[in-house]
Image (cartoon, rainbow, N blue to C red):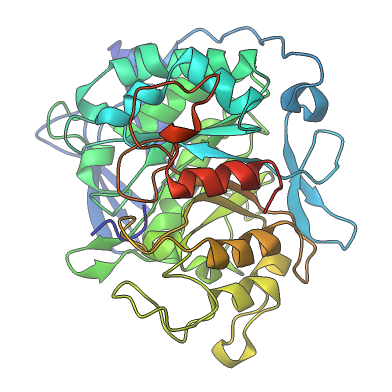
Length: 420
């Protein structure tokens, strides 16, 4: 949520691979598994990748139900629409729009909603064609402390979404700390494991045959030591490093990159997209934008604390903002709104379906690029305030009892069915 107020030879090989991605590398004298890295003047540590992730067996491809989204659209790619602008497309090149729900943090009560029956209900009753699995890393018993998030829950979600022919967005939920290069992601103090590198090594090997899997490299890069984490200095090098890991195992999977300031400053990416070592732009890469409708809208004064009065976020996407020297974002970047809410940025107040409508109209293709923008709503949970779609985390989801839905949940349910 925005502004949320070991086999030695394999280890050596992994270290050599990771070391090739930065400007300067030296091995820390205190621990041969740890590298001290210097990227754009900043020094940080990178730990090791578990040998089990380096040799994990790939799952065979699931068979997707006939006429399901994945059966119809196949493995997605980034291609140009009829206006000549890049967007998310089917395997055959037809522009598509994914719409669905995101989990809340699985270390909290949100995990109660991640069940086989609920995912089936999201497809059959809610009309979702994508499900976002938000994997918090180091917060209050997150991924770093609970191996079942990968070894059991993730494997099950990959299977359950495949059984329903839904796409799955696996989100490495960078939030706190706000720097994706922070030690708690790259060299965890509990064991010196490069959690991010290890996770994407495992996933890209394990799920490389699956047409429905998509990756989100970092959720919401934000602040560190009172300074905003910058795209070119930190986020881009991190994303290029993770993408190199992923591409070594899955050469064309859609990969989505978080952007600065809780994924609000997507304009910083224009002219600075991810490239491989030869300087060639990576294919099948998209960039994240997050918004909460009462806070991020067309610049109006919504009389709330978490508001950006005078900042016309909508205009930047729809047609560009010359007075800010920001070209039309959707003409320049393929965008995926991996998280958005109907409220203010806290998630707790100010339900605004009217302002949400403005954004969803733009994302339906009403913009100068004609780009259809895919989205996941925050969240399929009773957590985090009035932006949550549910009143409680356990209950009758299917057949759905309407009493379980919040006002936000009722609104999003209708919009998933293209009803206002």
